[in-house]
Amino acid sequence: MADGAQQRALNTAFAPPPPLWKHFTTENLKKLGDIKKEASKDDNGRPQKKDWSPAELRSLKVPPELRFLLPPEIPSEQYSVFGEVQNLLTDLPSLEEQGITQLYPSLPKSDPNGAAASQSAQPLNHAYYLMKISKSLLLNFLEFVGILSVAPDQFEPKIEDIRNLFINAHHLLNLYRPHQARESLILMMEEQLRRTKEEIEQMDKLKEELITVLDQLAAEGADVESTIRSSIEDGKDAARTEEESTEDDQLIWDLLDGKLDG
Image (cartoon, rainbow, N blue to C red; front, side, top):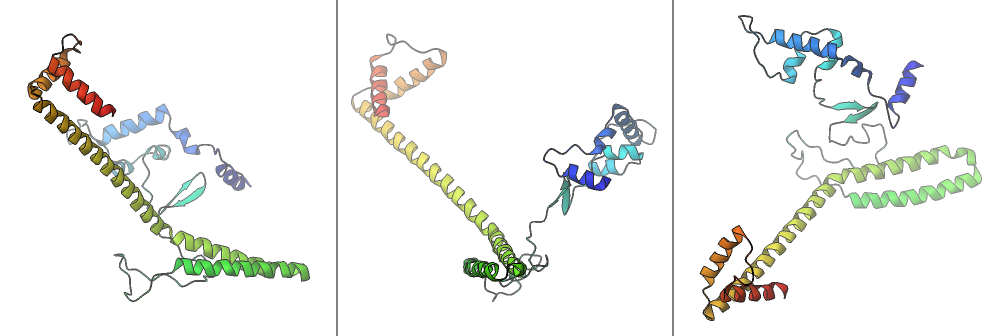
């Protein structure tokens, strides 16, 4: 009864913290610090400064109440969050492993290196079998309605068939997720590349316009290089007023403003 109440508490949306938090007291932390200080002493009994790794901390001999203060091992297969078991493995288990009837061919086996076991094996046609399952669902639903109208007490086998069809369709869609993730990543990279090319094209276009303006100024006899250099140097100290600008400066900025605004 107590186990059932604890399980319900763990599965709530706002589950309480695990009871191990009660061990994180100032007294226990001080005890753990003393143990670490004692374990870090050299052969002459002098304490040494040491950076403890999680594995080294777990190897320390500590009382049971201090064991919760040590970092746990990194889970390799699964872990529990608020009573819900989460899997770290990315491989999707087959329906046969889950005890469910599979209505489509199994995928070709792969070795640990990821190579297909048989080069002649054809890839699974997800769309074809999803279409077949969808048609079977419509047929089974019509049969289910017919059973309810004739013998309502015999509906359970047909419900199980429909349930199995839905599970197979859902599993097929999940098998397609890695391909969907790859295609989504490709689209994201293509979009990023497109935006980068557009920015480069805009910069090249602005560069050409600026070169045209500078060539035009040079053709009119303005000392472009010295004017730009002096404008940059003067701008580091303070903004120059309109009265202080030379005739060449004003001509350059007027042409540039007209190009950029246009």
